[in-house]
Image (cartoon, rainbow, N blue to C red):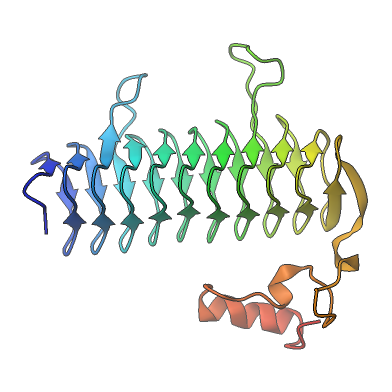
Length: 250
């Protein structure tokens, strides 16, 4: 399952059924879980600038698409999926089913909860914290430098579980986006967003509770989104959400 043009260090640990595509490089301190598929022209375990940062561990059943670059020193749970040409630095701890869209840029020392969805061209600054079931849409930037350029004063943003950060928003350093909240498209988030609220505008301001936003078909509120959107989630998770909302979707 290793293409003849791929370069796989003999010290790398590959599980059963792993596939490595043409012209990809797998360094020695890399662990690939069973059934993982690596596309063409990828590099896994690229050395970090700070020296030995430990192995790169990628859980079983993962899919890494072409031209993706992973540094050493991160751990990903089962079911990781990337788009093409992602860059993922060292020091990342990710739970199961992280999805990183094409041209995603994860700058390291960051944690991700279960079932996080990052769309294309998302930049996550070093030191960020992203909770489970978070959605981050294209061209969002999570910053970490309050006085750029600076050295040693970086602090990442925190995005709590079930939050949604819409297209082209910017979240400034140290800001906390609360559980189940919505950051509207093109918002500039300078202050903490309380749980379950809408933040919109430049600068971003709290505009009220998220459940005031209706679905386009008039069938009920759009948020919390887990009332009505279940595609791609495990059955046990969906059962819990149905129980939470009494199975009514409203």
